[in-house]
Length: 94
Length: 260
Image (spheres, each protein chain N blue to C red):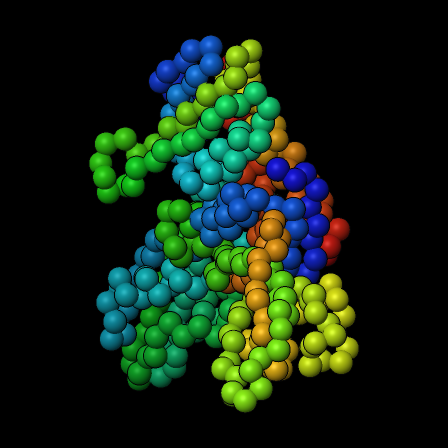
C-alpha cells in the first residue's frame, strides 16, 4: 500500500492508494460514509486493460472543522474494530 | 455501520459451510467475499523441473495440472513467497495421482490424494521435481483457497393470501435460506417462527412449503447467508478468519500511513 496525495485542502482530499482494489476500497469508502464529519466519499478505479491510471483514487469531502485525513484515520480504525467484532462473533458461533 | 454482528451456522463441515451474519453492510460482505477468493494465499506448484517425461503430454500441460492440485497450507508457519519442494516419480503402466507426490515438508501435502495427473502406459515414466510457492489468488487462480464463495440475502417469506383454488399452482423456486415468518401456513408441522430453513429442505419450491398460499419474498436487511467452500488447503474457519484479518491489516496500514 503506497499513498500519494493528489489534492489536499482543509475539507477535501484526493488520494491515490497504490496496490489496492475494490476489495478494500469499497470497505473503506463504506466506513468513511458512516464516519461523522464526512460529507462525501467515493473512489474510482480503472480496469487493468484501460492503460494509464489503474490505482484507485479515494476522494473525501468533509464538513467544516473536520480534517479529511483525520476522518480517513477514523474510518480505518472503524474497519479494524469491525473486523475484531466480526471475528469474535464468528468464533463464538463455532 | 452496525457494530454488533450475529453469526449463526446453518451447515458446517471442514471444507464447506453456510453461515448467517446479521448486522453487516453489503460493502463489508463483499469485501470479505473478495478477500476469501483473492487475498488468502495457498501453496501451489509454480516451477517444475522435469527429469524424465516420456508420457504422451508436454511438460507444460503436466505443469498446469500440477499447479491445480490443492496443497495443505498451514498459514501460521509460512509467509507469502515461501517455497516447498515436491517430487513425483511414477513408472507406467500406472496412473500418476496427486497422492504420489512426495513433499519435503510434512505440513504441505496434497489435500486430495486421488487427483489423476496422467495415465502412463508400459515404458512411460514421469519423474520431476516441483517448487510450490505460497501466493494469492490475485496472482493466479491456482492459489485461490476459497472455491464457490458467495453470499445471498436472508429471505423472509410472507403469506399474503390464498392461491386460486381452481388453478394448478406453478412452482415458485427460491434458493438460499429463509427465516420462517409464517409457521402456521407451513407444510412442515414442526415449523417455528424465526427458524432458519435452507430452501433445499422443500426442494427450493415455495409452493411445497406453503401449499395453496400466495407468498411474497423479501430480503432481510443487513442479513447475509455466506456459502463458503475451500479447496482443502485449510478449513472454512481459517479462510474466513484470514480474509477478515487481511482487510483489517490493510486498514491498520492505512491508518498508520495517514498519521504521518
